[in-house]
Amino acid sequence: MVHQGKVRDVYEVSDHVILMVASDRVSAFDVILPQTIPRKGEVLTKLTAWWLDSLRDVLDHHLISVDTQEILTKFPSLEHSKANWEDRSMLVHKTKPVMVECVVRGYISGSAWKEYRNSGTLAGEDLPAGLIENGALPEPIFSPSTKATTGHDENITFSEVINIQGEVEAQKLKDLSFHIYNHGANFAHERGIILADTKFEFGHHSDGRLLLIDEVLTPDSSRFWPAETYKAGEKQPSLDKQPVRDFLDAISSWDKQPPPPDLTNDVVSETTSRYLKIFRALTGTDLDSFISPKFE
Image (cartoon, rainbow, N blue to C red):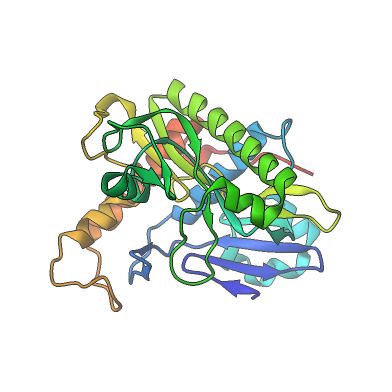
């Protein structure tokens, strides 16, 4: 194993290829919880593959395959560990990650709203007056952040991205991020879903190409809201692990530090249901009926 994150395990299978395993582990408030969310990893993996298939003609990405048999054909030695990664893994090209999280916001929510509420700014830059929580922005904004290895990411300005990556690549990151966000937002809108915000990650292949990497437009990297119940200024029923956050927020005795409390069976079940619901709503098919696209 090369790396184990809160919810992701990464294995090196050759000099230039890695296996990214999306576990069913779930974290909240930067704490890994005792219970897993069944099928979450499968949703994240296959939804990413579905989005990348829809984007294959417009950008380069790192994905080689999410199909179990195709992965085993390329790397037969993985057979003995198949139970640990089957249906929840991306075989990908190894890259050197760009150390910037490329966030695009179409609505003001989360950390962006907290800063705006206090100072009228985002990453220290002025935003239009009169915005309301979870309200639509006049137009989507590029809202990058640091890619912290420990602690929390921090919002930064585009000028800081230029300082980190250089002007040419910073502009390319921004342009690609807007393109992917607009693609996802328009598609989701047709299915009655609001893509409030999302983050993208990029990396450099050994041949120098800039590739889209990691998850793409999943409920763990994006805020999806049902359009039919949307009202600006009100709390939104996010199609993600919101039941987990709500449950933990209601436990006043927990200080958001390890060890966390146990999740109830109902919370686990409801969270799985939300992941399956957003997968079905976007792709038009149930997870068990999904046929993984071919990339190479």
